[in-house]
Structures are given as C-alpha cells and as structure tokens.
Length: 398
Image (cartoon, rainbow, N blue to C red; front, side, top):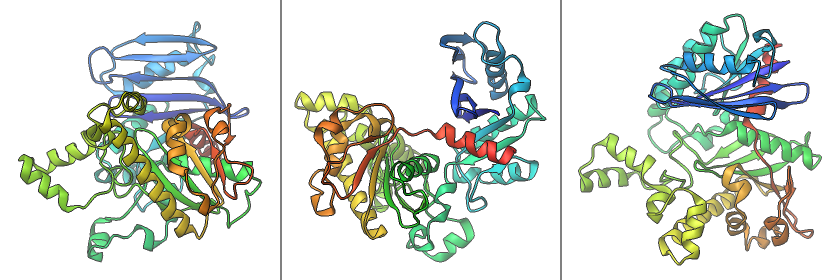
C-alpha cells in the first residue's frame, strides 16, 4: 500500500508518499506561498530535487501540483494516480469528539469543521486540504489524524482548569495538548527499544522541543498530562510564544501598551518566548552563538527555557510516581546537546545520569545518552509524525 500524507497549513502544504511495505518515503516535498504571488513546490523523489513554480491560488491547485509531480516522467515516483491507495491528513484539533484517527466522511468532516474555533489558525487550513484532495481524488479513502487525540486519555483532574465548571460544560474550555502524534511515536519507540511494549507501568517523560515545544507524561503508552494547554500558547516558553504565566498579565499588558485583546494575544504568540527575551532570535543556534559572545539576554533566554523544561520534567516524574525513561525529540531535542544537558544535569537524585560524550556525539536513529550507572534511561529519538499518520491511514483504509 502507498499512502500520501498531507499536512496543510494556511499558506503551505507539506507531503510525503510512503510505501507502507518498507515504511519509507518514496517522495516528499512542500508547496509554499499558496494564495500569494511567487508560489512554488519543492519536490524530491528518486534522488532528484526539483523546484516547480506554478500559480497556486488555493490548496486545490497546490494538491494538483503535488499529484502532477508524483507522476511526472522525469522526477515522479509512481506511474499513475491509481498507485495512491489512501490519503492521510494531519488535523490539529479533535476536541472531545474524537479520541482516535477517523475516516473522513461527510459526517466526520462536519464535526471537524465545527471545531475550528478551538484552532482558528490551523483547523480551517486542514479542512481546505482535505476538501481539495477529495475534489481531485473522490474515490480514494481519506483519514484524519489529530494532534490532540493522543492526549484524550488524560484524567479529568489533569485537564480541568480552576475556573467555574460551567465554562467547561458550556464551551469545552480545558487542557487539550498538542504534538500528540510526536509524543505517541517517540514514547512507543522508547518502549520498543527497551523491550517494554506491553508494560502498562512503563513511565516516560517525552520532550518535544522545537520552535513550538511541549512535554508529556506517558504511562503504558497513554498520555496522563501534557504542557501545552487550551491552545499551543501554554507550557514552556518557546520560539516566539510566552508559555505559562499569570493570566492577569494579559490585561496589564493591554493597558500599559494600549493594545486590544487580539493585539495582546498576538504579542504573546509571535513576539514573546526566547525571541522576546533575547532580542536576538527565535532560533536556538543564533541564541547559542550570541551567548558565546557574551550576550546576557541570549543566555538568559536559554536558561529560562531549560529551567522551565526541567520543572515540567520534575513535575511529571512526580505525577507518574517515578520515571523509567526520558526522551528528547524534534529539532532542538534531537540536535542541541547543550539544551539536553542543561535540562537533565544534577538530576542524580532522580537516578538520571547522562554520559556527556554520548550526548555530544549522536549517531543515526535512536541514541541512548544515559550513563551505564543511570537508573533512568535517557534517549534521543528522531520523531516521525508522518509515519504515525501513514500507519493510522493504512489501518483505517483497510
């Protein structure tokens, strides 16, 4: 079976065509500037990289560009569209309506569209991507895989806020969590690696650290708690997002800077985090270079980030009643040894000891960076959200 994985953003569309027999991509790429001038698609297949420039006023045209690229005689990966057996779509929000991936029928699509107010920046784009695919491939089964569904196993005490219960009953205001496909994948890979796939007591803290970051407590393959909240603004400070703070600060900022509520939320989402703290960049490589040159605010931004991650790690170890494994993943988690070390150093009291040489010299695939005498395994596992989507798509399409 060949599964096409689609991840539609507001003005972009990423894709992979995965051969499920080998679980490896045979083509991948992305369309940029959809709905804008100068739209293009970067496509890779059979060792060839090409850039295709074409007008893409909507996602429908972008999908057509992708499908044409996949069957192109020069740089394609398949001989005809008939080789695409199913399409898996990344969809951000499942609300409380779905706790697993679903076939995208008219009924499920109507429910997904109704959840757009919970993710107004992402959900409409995801829906547009699905509709564009359905218009071009009406007879191909399609599956929606949600960012939030993995966290639907959280107990009520973990997702309810300390506000009047009516707000939850009337408007479903609660913790949802995000990056679920990533947390699900790496916690599962950790269980496989350590031979504990069937152990319902296997306790893992997974740290998905990138421009957007979240941390999860996972027990026996199920999410018990996670740092991102009602929206992806909650949790640790991120590239440009503030993370957790006293909610009264919102009104205080609005009054002091003369901002509207929408402007204040934009300030917290796009001008805060390590970018706002440092005044340098949201890119951790830039922060590391600036800190090395003596920039105090860049170092402060790094320290605030790692300290916050460390607090969540300790909190989740307590929530789980101990921890067997810590997993780092995503762009920063996989590639920044300094961040990893800052988060886990001096945790010997928890049984965590990291081998600095291993941490500084990773190889491909899963890397164990804990020392031999560490009671807690510390792993770096490359995430693969597209493979999670493809596996669910294959399961449901069959």
